[in-house]
Length: 306
Image (cartoon, rainbow, N blue to C red; front, side, top):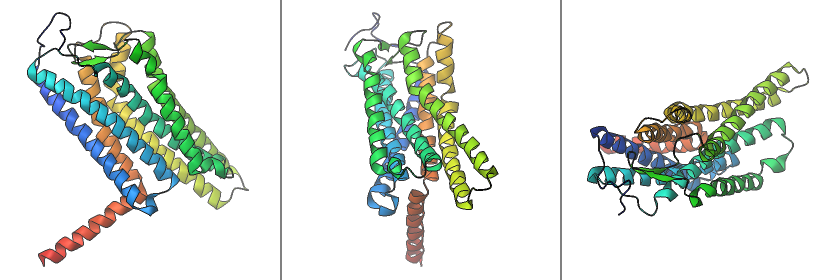
C-alpha cells in the first residue's frame, strides 16, 4: 500500500457506491452479450461470413475494453468501501489499456465501414473483400492501437488521482491528452462519418445514372443502411460520452470538477451495454439463430406444460 499526497484515507460520498455498482453491472452485461455473440458465431456456420467476422472483432474489442474497465471499477469500488488511498502496481497499466480498448472498439467499427465502402465503390476488387485482406486490416489496427499509446505508459503520464480512485491521464491542455483524444476518438469518428457521407453521395449519383442496374442500386442502398447502422452505434458512444468530452474541453480552460473522471467514465461504461445490444440486433444472421433457439425453447415449454 502506498500513501498518496500524504493521505491514508479517502473521502467517500454515498453516491460513489451507486456509480460503482451501476458501472460494474453495465460492463458485465456488455461482456456477456459479446461472449454470447462469439459463441453463436463459433458454433453456427451460417454466421461465419466476412461481415460477421468484422462484427466479431468488435465483440473481442468489447471484451478487452470491458474486462479492463471492469477491473478499474472493482478496484475503485474496493477502495471506496475501505475508504483507503491505494495505488497498486497495475494502476497505470489499466489506464493505458482503457485507451487501447477504446481504440480497438472504435477502429473495429471503422474497419466495418471501410468494408462496406469497398463493396459498393470497388465491387470488382474481390481480393479486398476477402477474409484474408480484412483479417490483415484487423491485425494492423490491433498493432497500431497497442503500440501507438505505449509512450504514455512508460513516461509516467498517467498518475493516481485520489478523488477519483484511479490512475488517469490528467485532464488538462497537454500533448498526451490531445494526442490520445485525437488518436482514439477523433480519427475513427472522422473516418466513419466521411465514409457515410461519401456513400450517400455515391448512392445519389448512381440513382441518377440511366446505365445503373437495379441490382447495383439495391446493393449500394443496402450497404449504405449498414454504414448508417454503424453511425447509429457510435452515436450511442458519442451521446453518452458527452460528459467526458465536456470535461476534457473544460480542462483546457480551467480545472475540471473534483470527481470529473467518475462521472465521465460512468456514462462511457453505461454505453457499452447499449452498444452490444444494438450490435446484436443489427447482426441478422446471429439474431436469426437467437430467434430460432427462442422458438424451440418456447415450443418445448408449451409441450411440457401440456
